Image 1: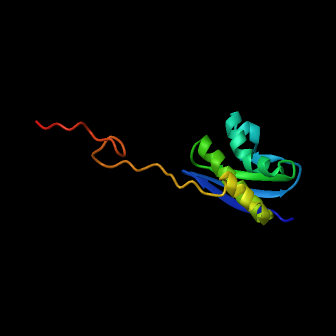
Image 2 (image 1 turned 180 degrees about the vertical axis):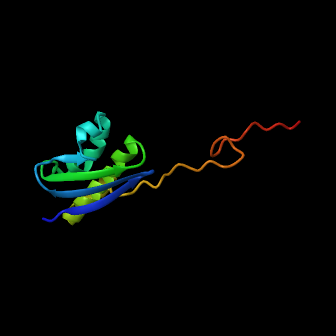
Amino acid sequence: MEVVNTIGRRKTAVARIYVSEGKGNITINKRELKEYFPAETLQYIAMQPLNLLEVAEKYDIKANLDGGGPKGQAEAFRLAVTRALMEIDPESRPQLKAAGFVTRDPREVERKKPGQPKARKRFQFSKR
């Protein structure tokens, strides 16, 4: 198996990953997964597709994460891993789709408008 390269996005986070056969080592920005995502919930989110298909010990993953916050990065990583697993084994797609990992979450932060304190909030209106 050659190296599989995929990309995942969430909010402003971008995850570029390289999957190859190995022993289950996951390196993110030259750091271990547990070091990069110290929170258990973020580790769980990042590992969801691998644990669902029970292939966590089968592949080595090198990832470059950029932009966004920790949660967005973890979800971008999850999408990239899902796409890589579908490229490696197309039969795994229905299982991953049923779990909701295939769809890219399109929600983004709305821009701030001029003359307002936030995107939708307005300054108090005074009639007189």
